[in-house]
Image (cartoon, rainbow, N blue to C red; front, side, top):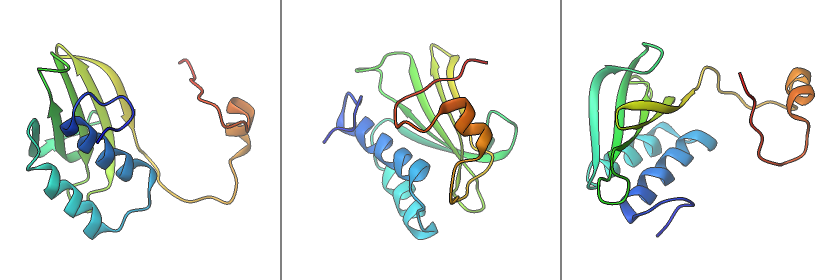
Length: 130
C-alpha cells in the first residue's frame, strides 16, 4: 500500500490518516479509530498534553522513519477535545521546513472573492509566497 510520496507502508498509513483528517468531513468516532490504529504503527508516537506550532493545546501524532527518511519528523497536531486537525509540521534534522495551520474549517457554497482573485478557479497546484 502506498500513498503518493510515501516510502513505506507505515508512512502510507500515516499519510492516509492525515489526508482523511485534512480533506474529509470525518465523524469523531472515525477520527478516534484512525488515531488508535496509528498507535500500533512502527515509527508513530503520540504525545499528549503538548501544543501545536501556534501554542494551542494539542495531541501530537508524530511519524519518524530513519531508514527511509533519515532526520525527518512528520507531525499532526490534533485538538485534544474533538481530534480535529489543528496543524501539520515537518522537520528535517530538527529544523522546521513545512508548517500548515488550520484556523477555520467549514463547507462553503462558493470560494470567497479574495481567494478567487489570488488563486483563480482552475484545479491546478498553486503556491503563494509570503
